[in-house]
Length: 112
Length: 114
Image 1 (tube, helix red, strand yellow):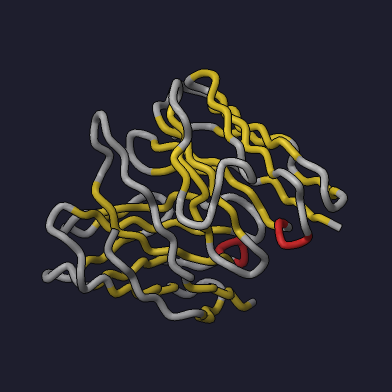
Image 2 (cartoon, helix red, strand yellow; image 1 turned 135 degrees about the vertical axis):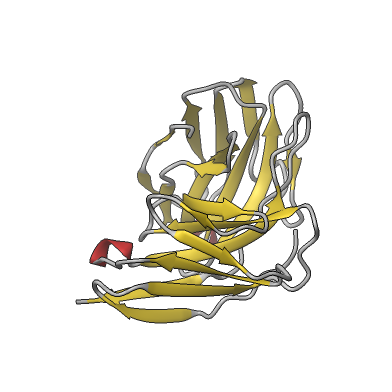
């Protein structure tokens, strides 16, 4: 299984600011996925990040709000821009391993 | 991905077997059944998966009906640490050169009671 780390593990941010979340994998992977989990809800896919190309966003998510970088095969970042309290969620990255999807520990974001 | 249906919540006494059902009546022939669990505020953890045969690993057993329209995840001796939300997902297995999005339903919140 892949070992995935995320930074920061949690943060409290002010409205209107931006936060960049980092995701590091211990092996090279083609695709990385970013999910959002709002309080009390299930996971929702934000976008899929392929190294060397622009991320593919799901309906309801746009690049201006959630820009993603994928500079190499083990790393990705997700930025939550111009934050509002509605962005308070857990953000998770995941990768597809040989057997199954594997998930990072998540970043808990609170926007005041 | 095929849609799955799970009960929203279940209780299980500590030490007893926890049987978590999942309906996936529209599953395709090449889609596997995967189970994940999410312990409070952590990332989802892979548990087990199967195509049509029953599967067992160190964490759980997976029983898939012959018509593949439903399955049951069995935790043989539930402990308090098994309290979590359990997600049943159906998807094709990993394909070289491609990928498939994973869609999560609402899952089953399992509460293990002392």
